[in-house]
Length: 622
Ligand code: SAT
Ligand code: MN
Image 1 (cartoon, rainbow, N blue to C red):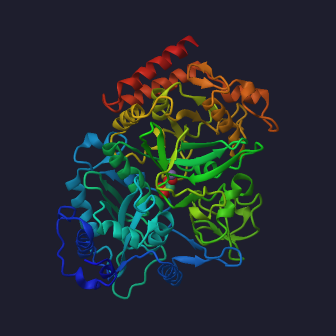
Image 2 (cartoon, rainbow, N blue to C red):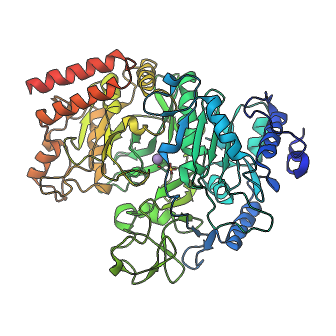
Image 3 (tube, rainbow, N blue to C red):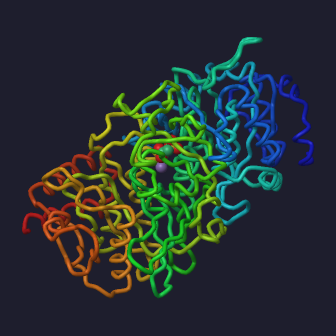
């Protein structure tokens, strides 16, 4: 089949295909395989129309115009926010739904205790009837996309079928969409199948809700057949299947099998006053400041940061014994609240236009607002649900998980080579979370295995990015708890194995950081944001061997004099609290780690148990 024929295929070619046992039909490769799959899905979901997305500007314009007409998007005032739109989701569809997210591997132990497992056949027979006719009255879009530069050595291709034009517009920002990708498929490149339906079929003549969705939700991953099926939600990671579903859950499985890592990490280049360049990847749970760190403006003179990615990094050991990283995405899907001139000026500048906002507040002048954008709230607003709002009401105007979707290229400090196919060699890996107590500002792992141990024990206070009680402490190893597509204990083992492929003197050094420690008076001890560069400065001086690390029970700490705190309001007492290690509460953490490791029923690798034993030994003597 010729590439051009795809766009002119009659929509009714699918109607002749009969619904089959989905996922069971051998597809073959190339465009024939793709069109056979599209026909299968269309026969199942019965859309009115099929639209093959070519990724062109004209197509995107038409899509946005249609969504404005349908009431899904509100066009913002172009004087303030050109080319930008506001979407308001259904109030029940505002975050990833982890309880409805499943890993359907053949064997339960391959999903592991941290995932919801479902037997593939069982869950197929549950969801297939839901998808049957689920696109009636709607357009089915076929979106071919590439994660990483098209054709790059670490890039991977996917196709998303969706009945949500909002999802299409978002995927066009977040990935590389278009005909180049079809050309790769035509050339035989393997691709991941992702199917998404909001689960809101229309009767003839029925008008769609502005934000169609269904109370019943399923986000199902089939790691063995490289498929994702998502039903019922139009929001974020539930609907932009390229992101968490593919680039993390499915990609982590591909990485396990191929010898690389798919990680929930930002990626930056740090340039010191001498012009030396370092590459740092950092894993933090959702809504813990990854985007802020990715767009850091150092407060120490002479330092610069260039952004490479803010959420996902794919890491691959190179021939040279170093660990190479790419950002597979092409845009940012960032948390709006807390993003302002004083916290992330770069993000504010990035959002000057061409941005899709979701669940932020609308100003009377047709611009947007959210908590933290400015110190003072405007006198009146329309809140994220479309109701009149004034500051006196005492509730937030924007949803705490409200988001912006914007192209990475629009970031003023994006690295010129941010989408180079080979990526960048890593010098340091940071693990962090939101911890009010116990965890110091920064601690260095003594070696790779200790670094993997630190990653495996990360815990963090819950945020609004996922459903659940905000503030509750939960284990979030490598910030991958909701995103690892296979048994997390096997994943720890895979990290250890990757270390063996690196040259010991070229492997990135591993650090644990915590910007969120609070003093006994309940206030944050560390200013965070641009001042986090002071911690990175120490990290780089450690890499260069310019300063010693002080051995402690939990890892290497800075000497007080080596952390540059000149000009910031951090007192000696604050510094002492920031680095205080209380052996008794750390021993309690060690007990919790043991409990956590035990949930994996013997699968946690022995070197990590040895690290735990060594940690306890050091704490008991501290
Ligand atoms: O909704 S997403 O999963 O894409 C965002 C996040 O949780 O980080
Ligand atoms: Mn994330």
